[in-house]
Length: 89
Image 1 (cartoon, rainbow, N blue to C red):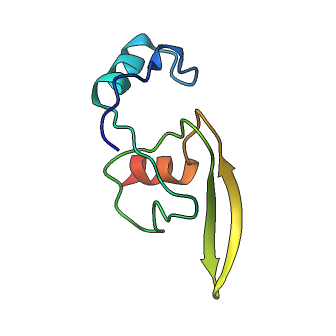
Image 2 (image 1 turned 180 degrees about the vertical axis):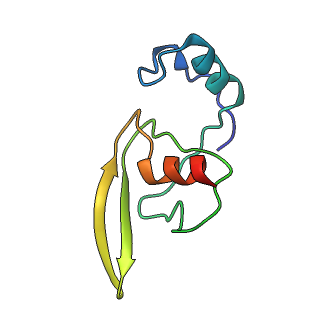
């Protein structure tokens, strides 16, 4: 966990603007999570917007004690639900 200056965001394709790539490089923080670890709960306040670098994240909702799979977040993507929450909070 923590900041990792070895990651080069210059080839981060979703961010087209060089200034945005540089900002991600300057203030972004690299974190690792174990398989199955819960990252964000529904309704949770978000201070940061997660971007997947390696692996994938399973996004689901719980309804009547059942998990409903919504989608997977793949490398160089972010969770659209997190983005919506971040922009509308």
